[in-house]
Length: 277
Image (cartoon, rainbow, N blue to C red):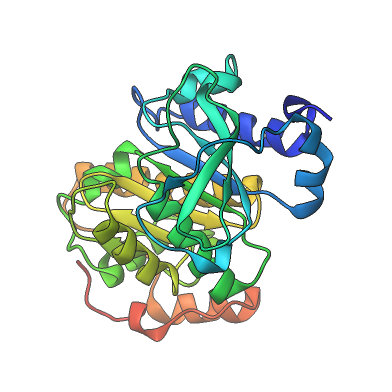
């Protein structure tokens, strides 16, 4: 099978285009990676070039040795993924040490995988350890309302989780573990990758202050839906704060506990404090 005929590639391209249509990917902003299933790799094997040069990842991910990933290219535009995928995205293989990768398909006009590759791979490794083999998608984008809130809310998991939970009843059901927050750091390096991967041990969403958001999930629909839910809640909060600086009414701690019971989810008590931001 040709790579572009594979269903997982079609799903990847659709998600990339959905993010572009939401306005989350200005210029070459954002990146997306998918850990390809073994049977999917086998189905496209005839279209892969296994003779490429091994290159340093910039970190070491031994638990991902031998794995294949579909990732966006550095400097590539999400708006072009659906119309010119062979130039915009690539499939990479991780070597047996977890320290190097090689391009097996894509980026036909040259280039390399996303500059955030260390963050993506370290987060994939963390999610496998924390949640098992089912987690396969890591998504980074620049949603405007979420970024705006990093200038006015305390940069803590407690503040962001509680404020966003209150904006829509579905929020604590969609992300019951809460949201992690990374203070501003230079993107693309090992330090921010390490900070994010530490948070991903506990959360499926991590906000990068003044930059964007990372989300992890089992498939494209769940991961995009998680990102979409957080950003919609952020949009509601921006509107609420624009109308008046305080809430006239909101969801209270005991009401969150009732919701958790009825929807069979566990909400950490550290987010159910009385004091409001």
